[in-house]
Image 1 (cartoon, rainbow, N blue to C red):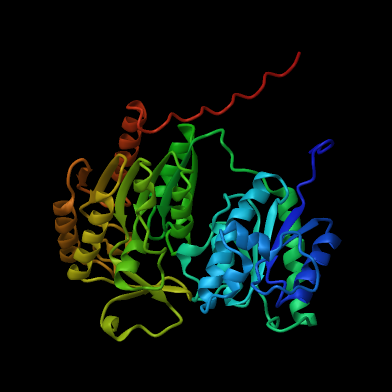
Image 2 (cartoon, rainbow, N blue to C red):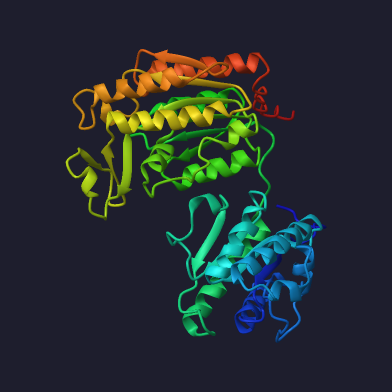
Length: 428
């Protein structure tokens, strides 16, 4: 690709507390420069003492939050103080990206810095390189709903107090990664409307095998999200940024997990953001009958006598009771009732994942009927409901989804797809 004449996209905004981590931030700055990038440092510490002058001072950050640094530092609650600095950091970060002074972001921190980093990175659009070096990267302390869908992270091992060869290795990798990402990052394509679809692997839910190419043939880009917690989090984050022309939210297992208190959750706003923004939604209750848990932990005593399916060494599922499914049905109904856009619900009467078919280990037809009764009975106009005499993995389900999609395109509810460009005619 010819890049002649183009301004380099290699400026990295480094955010950290210069008052407490000056050596680490200076080392990151040097690593960014060694990797061929340019470093812009933002100090979010609350003390009026620094070993070197950052490009964006902590006084600038406090002022962006409407406070003086002295007012922030005077807070008796360090959490309140850091939340104020977070507000200022978000405002100045967004300004730096708007003005082209930064192309990627690299945040360094322990739990305090990570708390700030999660909000700052989540405020940036998808496609902007975001890298977190944290003492709690990949920890259960970090709730999924706070993660930007394209956030990259590395554990800051051995780096709590001062530099050593171990933590230098992590910092150097992070700096090189974000510089490389800045140079190669590209904005989301806008040539075709984007449709978001939720699903599981094809051993459980198979509709996507036929659904994705059918939508692509209609001129849409299709993004499929794996509904195992973080996939749904990314789906909701993009919906909240109004990136989808329509959503086919056909697997709500994460919502069911959230109702049951499972850690395999996408957060409390699952099934809310598309409706809040009026994005058209075709919804089905795929896999809501399973409760997920880590395979590597003992089955909770409350589930000990239930059929259990171990999908792999990471994730296992037990079947839910009729009463538990009724609770999930009420939660789905409540969320859909708040939707501001068009909603159609397709309810397969014969089952909602492959292992609940007759003869399979999670077959519980009476419990499924209890869910269907509670779910359909709770839905109200203007939500459209189609009760399908079939299974979610049957061809009739795919046909029903596509028929609704096509009707909404004809009605102008979903924007039309963009036909694929024809190949250029060979020159004579």
